[in-house]
Image (cartoon, rainbow, N blue to C red; front, top):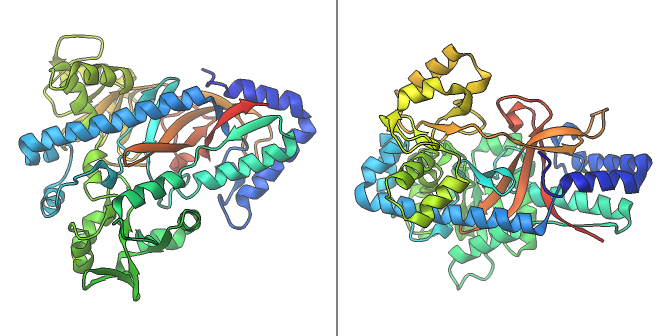
Length: 454
């Protein structure tokens, strides 16, 4: 289905510019994307044009995302207060992860957290919650830079015909960092922490983020855990003092899980220094919470308004290890295993915390035997969910190297979630019908921008 104002904008762009101007704009954007300092290494990694949306659409997206984050936060608090260990096990956390979290104070504020559990439904198709800044494409360090490239090229070649307004991400991240810092801190200094191999192999997302935070008045440095020391209540990097630890969330949380081997660093995050995102973010990002929310909406564990929100904005999701499930179009419970096996064409199987399409099986794209084996293997684990398959949104765009020019793409729209607010978008799209739309499987990147026609 056409997305919002985008199809009309692309058509108008072609009609007003003409083939020659359109190609000049494409070429400029492509060169900017792959020039120094690098945003993307290859032209095909990014769309030639942004996705155009209306301000009303962005308002609908952001309101739904903020409401979803608030609901997740309240629901996790409810379950944690009732039976903390049982809940953490049910959403797929391991015994060692639970033991590690038991040593930490529970977050007092949602500002400490970043969450990226899964897809939710916006006003015009599926959306995704995003918060990454690691070596994957399209993270926090590239969205604003990409928006600037698009805007400059369009303004130069279209002579003010189009006014595309960026939806900036980094300013909102900076506000979140300041909300966690001590009021007495004048020049906030933040340690962006990730594994050394991630930083060295793909440094540009981190470099972009450091530069963008500097514009916001925040001094940031990207470092591996081994470069940090916690001495006399101070976090230091080779003698330089820092006020906050920032760790962009990755689903498996590989970094946090190994920090207990870094005793000085572990001391730093035990309530003594602000930490964004908190190790507790792995709880709020479990896909199993969507399944628990759907069940809670049926069993009246949550209020009517919240239940209606779940049914409207979360694709039907159920935890696989629950003996009975209630399909979204029914009021009766049926055997979960029998239902999942019989309805493979309509379902997707997902692990609670993996990313990059790992441990995701899309029923309509695999043989029945493959689906059955995947389901049976997942039943042996905790936290796996089945979810209703949702058709991706289709847009028209082009990417470097596409001789055909403007062609259809199937897209995932991601909304960045930063504490209690949202800011900006990341788009991933592929021209090929298939089970995955992911950078790991060749999808192109882009961003959405608000459109006002002059």
